[in-house]
Length: 263
Image (cartoon, rainbow, N blue to C red; front, side, top):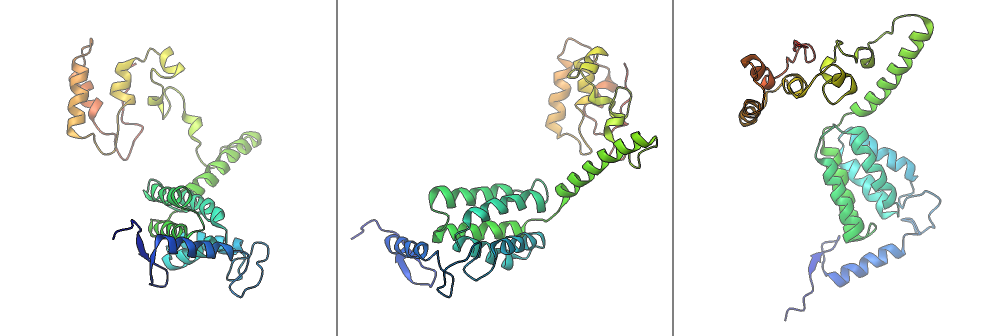
């Protein structure tokens, strides 16, 4: 007779019902205060006897170096030792600090965290599996320190600009803001959506033929068709050159200098 209970394999391979599994997880949580040797856990100590800060640092280095096994162990160790809150805080930081921008792993880690915290409990058997999955996903993603390097560089660049001004010399590197003006390298930024662009009389036509261009990969064919057809339906007669420019990708070797402004 089906009593509605679900079964699963326990960590030792034994078949358990949900009730048995929940009881095992409750037993685990009751032993959180002692380490693997039955001794009372010290401050910031994990069950293996390590310092949680060291384990957390190891987790980050493992993600950074794509060492899946070490990352998985560090996640498991933190969570089983009662530091699930620490693990989820750190793994989310590592996603933005140590992985390549735009990778879907950020959503994956967020989903595992949601399951561990909202559907189950962080320190349960299921919560440990979610943590291991999250650590594995992060370790398998392309690693990069690009965001941290960018933050360092942009901060130093701004400081260098100020120092050069105070010392009456040229900065060692160009700063974007020094060319952010009409007629400068980033002239196209000043369209109708900016005060300077509106003052120059740059209307929707300027935006369509200059400011809205993409690249270096061109627009999909259907997108190009929609852009050109929309422009043809406006109460303005565009030249063929303007229609071509509106959907022409920017030059990959000169992304900001391909437009010839017709102000």
